[in-house]
Length: 151
Image (cartoon, helix red, strand yellow):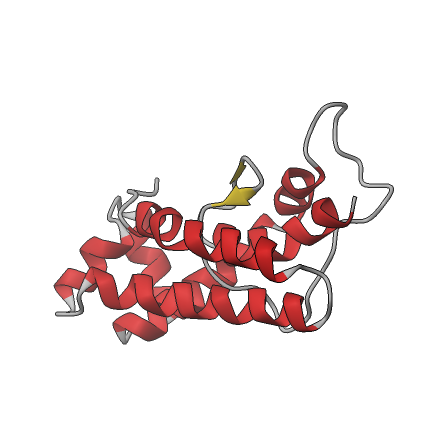
């Protein structure tokens, strides 16, 4: 049960941009200043992972945070980046247009997510082993989101 409650803050680190969780770790980024947890009485459908329900409930806030980190890395405002994404571009496309490498954006998002995971370990919400597993999965998940074309 503790791991299920812990996955939610980590999912924030991973799900920020995409807002969808897969197998306990979602797709990208950083969260808000607090480290939220999944409520024990979460309204997740039967058989659904509590972290998925939490991510679904907080997807807008996660996307905003991921958008903010990405925009800062690229050197544009979050509003400008959102406009570009709505036009069918990926974050990587926008970064390339501003002469910023995709890896720079991915690195900034991974660093922000790692900081949230470290906070969860310091707060005894995650074990170091759980944190290591999550941190290992973040770069690939975040790179996938950064290269994804949003509609």
